[in-house]
Length: 92
Image (cartoon, rainbow, N blue to C red):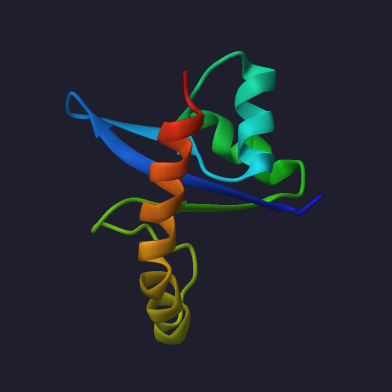
């Protein structure tokens, strides 16, 4: 299994909410019995040895320090939007 947990942040009625994007993130949500990942759970997921990547629409939270990594993360924004659309199709 991939050790990367990908989440997308959406504002739901003004509250930032984290939705799973990849299979690892979906499994964590399933274990929690929710459709979303709580912000306080992110640290626990990291303690389990997973890398957590949080992105969201135009506003992107980048977890790395250098400019090259930031640009690479910005380039993946369109992938996140595609993943969001796919996730909406899977959600009941």
